[in-house]
Length: 313
Length: 308
Image (tube, rainbow over all chains, first blue to last red; front, side, top):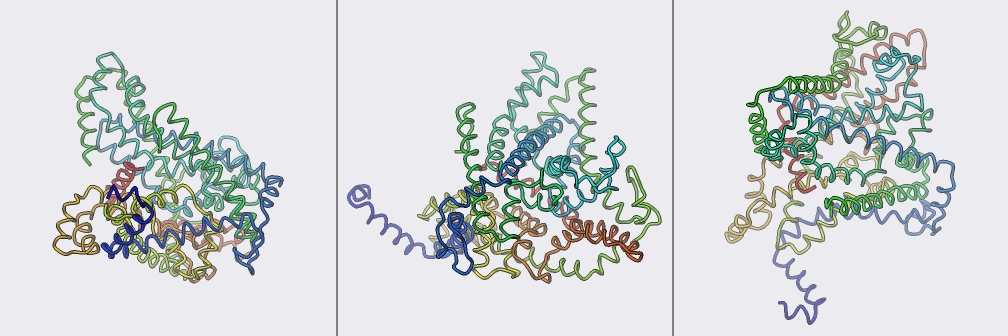
């Protein structure tokens, strides 16, 4: 095998595949629907991105429409929306990272310090619950709680805020949006950190105690370093999806009054593309969005590799 | 899970030591913080349940925390919710979607995970890389929309299922599980003349029931809560899943509220009530089964995390 491989690799590989198929027909038959699914619903849309460089006309289809180069990108970058969308996307993401990322870590550490197994179990069960509530219901409750007579509004009115529909005020939108995400996800997201905490060697705690460390210092010097690799990996994944704000949530919560702080790249793509039918332009915006995503992911991974030897690939 | 057990050992070892005053203060602070977080999590859900049994007028006037339903208690909201044709229709569509989507999803995930873990399958590496790539990069909603329309799924029930038939995260969970099944089982079955389909159904399926339970639940919950494929691909209201009607009721109701009129006033009140009742009705099925299935859900996170 090895000797022939050097002589005529191309031919060998082809016959290799053919004989592989002949010997395992059932295996290939089984793989067929799965491969077809990925090609049709994942790779075909990737090919469809070419319309970002074309003037898509429905009557002519993707293939026949005229190439226009970077026209759509240029008009997007020079449009008045561009700075606003970029600002909102970055701002929502950074705030989300700042608030929704540390809460699960903190929660897992707090839980880990609880002595009563029962108390811990019940706390976990309750805080996992919102994860299973649908986005529509979560956003619906947010809309209801922040209307002028809503529960959350009542709290803020008691604190001195005027009575208004909070979701009609641009300054409040990002806070409400991120609050909803933290509320829904902190319990569930803590599972993975909690699992990492269980992997820490108890001997390390004993050693710390012998050295005179109290519970707080143990947390600081044993627990945190113990779950640091998990934190880094999850942070990397999070940064990789940095620019892809869940547009469905935004679309459910925003309205023309709050576009100024609420409209992000992905919600703009949805609105311009599917409700205003500017297909090519919207695809260009979307491609810009995922391009930045990939750059961020690669960047974060490279930095992490250098600094801490944790990486995704 | 055994990881959990080792944690308990770790904490009991620490429990044996005497507690100082500082330690006790630490515990009290810790427990209060957790209680605060738990209460913040559960209160919106409880509020919704309380509100759904409350008198709508009293509810609108009520300020401050709602700690019990407001008298006069009423089941009127539930009566209206459960006799609303839209909601019943949506319920039916959602159940159909959960059923068929889960069956298709689990089947596809099983064969997918099986083929990418077979050493004799030459496309294995390429296929796995191809799957991983789709988790970081996608064509975006517009090109996907074109494909869905192009293959003739637009405005059909199946447009809510087929384009998301297989979830790559679930595939990776099952793949991790399949990798732990020894090759020798497959080899001996093949010697007995079994083909791959038979190996999958007779050996892998019975051995991986816990992992299959996890992904079945993930698919079922995802489909139960799914709404935006319907937003993108469905025009016919008869095909709307429950979540789409919920969206109309919860999010888009502003227009209805502002269209006032004398006889509308009472309608506004009942609308409020119906809102909370619908949330309860649509969420309860999941929250009822949830405590029994919790360990499976959590297991899924763990298996997925090993590779992720």
